[in-house]
Length: 139
Image (cartoon, rainbow, N blue to C red):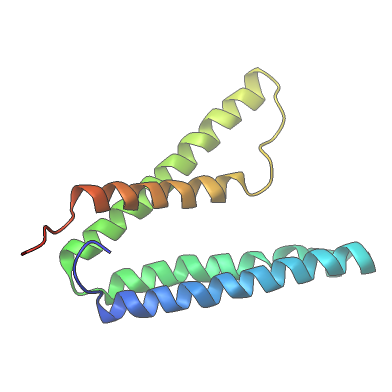
């Protein structure tokens, strides 16, 4: 965190992130196992394929709710910058990959690449913010 304490909104957000990520891990492994073992077809295959995306979508919606709940304008600005950096990095990788696929006939990106780019850019931005905005000790 960039300051001494965390706001109530930030604490709730971090608690909910842990819940969403735990749900994601359970659902993705459960769905992968079920698809491999049971080999569902048609509608069931689509259901088990989409199900792991729901916790991630929930996490994105939770980010929006956090921004609405955060009362500290500086903290809200920092979180918005991390989200914008993640979205920008994801869009840049997507555009480059699309042109490579169109002109150089390369294959598609591996699964989950764009989400990992988004999350990685957010994390890197937060690290940069932390190093630039550290509060100096009073001692």
